Length: 244
Image (spheres, rainbow, N blue to C red):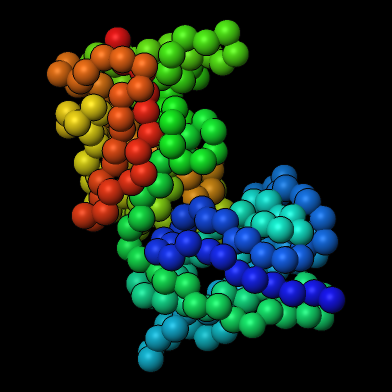
């Protein structure tokens, strides 16, 4: 007996990373090891169909997958969904197919990555030119140190919306040309505005955005300074960095 109960947070953004939870959407746990991303992992597939009175194209769009398991699929929302306000998503496994479920499509829904993979606490934010070190408290378990004022950091995110030179769905972003966000986000560190020097897709990655900012001289110091990104009037989850 195969069933599928969809639990996808509302407000997904075209081109972004999302998770779909269900019952038996695939037969095994497996991660993608190639790009462009495959649209079937563990035998399971997802299809999205935009809902509109005037569709720009016919048929379903296969959803690229980063990871699939019997309970969860991590996917990229197809770029083809851009400009639509809603879509349906359907799971397929062999000859069985779930009932379609409605999904809201929005232009922006910024999400910042955290080291605990739960969207809060220490952010997945690195100090530029520091060998990949996290901007976090010094720890014997991770390569991390507090960011200094006026240093540059890279914030890893998703859901920042449309970009220049978008790659094909499932394909990585390029270095040349870079894919810049069409809207420049606002970033605050400890409530202080941080100058943004780049915002766009991370080259060679799928669905991953990066924002390069300068830690402001006026930023407060401490081991858990809040970082918030706002774009298109929508604010992100809150993560933290260490600043000295």
